[in-house]
Length: 68
Image (cartoon, rainbow, N blue to C red; front, top):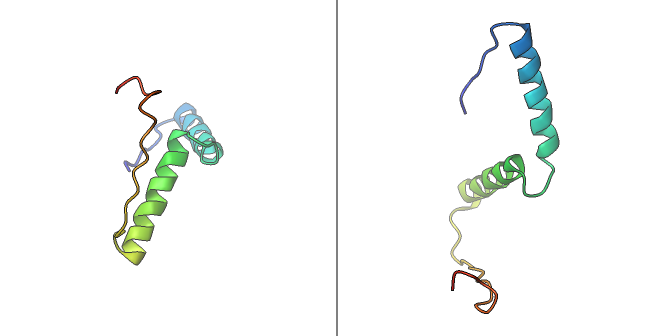
């Protein structure tokens, strides 16, 4: 990610608040930070154990899917 630096006290306070929110939303299912954390875990697993050799694609029921 990009590095952000604060120029004054208000910006430092805002950056501190953003870090605290990120820590909290990391554990909220479906949040942006939780998804980013899962993507990082998957990437780490692929680096450690190699690419998966078996993929599963979940397809919603055609009767209930508005796109089908």
